[in-house]
Image 1 (cartoon, rainbow, N blue to C red):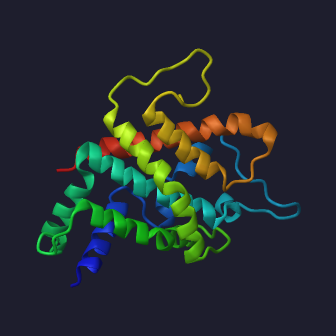
Image 2 (tube, rainbow, N blue to C red):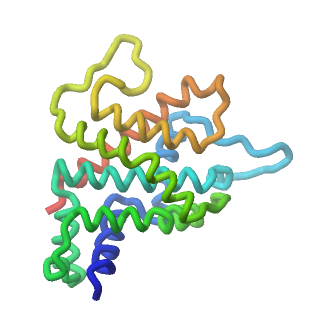
Length: 227
C-alpha cells in the first residue's frame, strides 16, 4: 500500500473519530443541528413548498465549511492532546495499517484530511439531501482563502492558557481570546453559507457561536479520553 493511501485511510479515521461521518444519524450532532436545538432559525421553505427536512434547504457549501472546521479542529487537538498521533497508533494496531513503516507524521494525515474535504462534504450533503454542487477548483479556492487564518488562530489558541474573559451583557463568545476568536471565525464561515436576514442575524450569530463552542467542547473532552 502506497504511503498516500495509508495517510488517506488514517485521515478517514481522523474524521470518523471526531464523529464527522457521512450518515444521517450523525447529522443530528452537527454544529448547525446543535444550533437549531437552541433556537437558531431553521430555513423557511419557499412559498407553497412544504418540507419536514430543513437540511434540504441548506446548501452543500455549509457542509464544506463544516468539513474545513473539523480538519482544523483535528490540527488543534493534535497540538493539545496528540489526537492525530493517537489515531495513527490506533490505525496501526486495529486496522493493521503500516503507518510507522510508511514514515507518516501527523502533517501527512492533515494533508489527507484536506484532500478528503470535497468527498466528506458531498457525502454529508447527500445523507440529508442538501442541494447544490461544488467543484474541486472551488473547494481549493475556499480552502486557500481560509487556511492561513485558521492556522494562525489554531496556533494561538493552543499556546494560550489564560482564562477566557466574559464581559457584561456579552452575547455569544468573546473576541478577545484566541480560543474563542477561533470559534467565532468558524461560526462566521458557517453563517456565510446560510440565508439569514439582517434583523435575525444579531441573535442568530451568538447562537451559532455557542453551538460551535458546545460541539468542540464535547469533542475535545472525548479526545482526551482516547488511549
